[in-house]
Length: 142
Image (tube, rainbow, N blue to C red; front, side, top):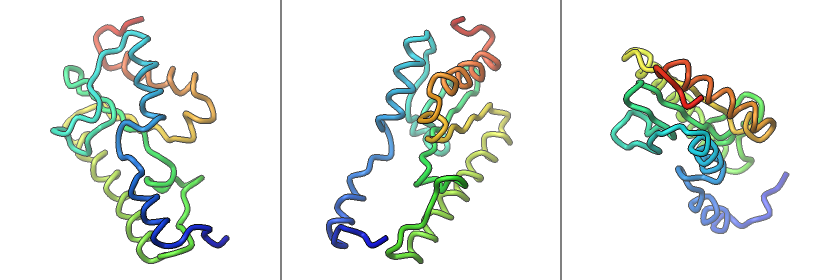
């Protein structure tokens, strides 16, 4: 499929994509907050800047987009600048492995949730996140 945008328009479009406080991330954090969970978002001082962090219980949660984190199911290499995108997306995937290893080596509890999990079944994915938090906190909100 040929890109319908010019290279400069595509570049402008891609530069506007946010790395944090995305609509999906905001939906998740709003729902978790409404269920009584208290956390910090996008903590810069923590490795990989987790989307959700509860330092007290050593919990970090990442919400990974299928495109930027090169999901095995939905990830794809754009048709233009194939070498650039292959390198970029593979590096993102490798960085995810490194960040996960970092937290595991420090005995933190890490959960990675894919964009498609939330889009396909938001309620059950929220329950999965809630159960994860409850599992590692002395007492959860429920």
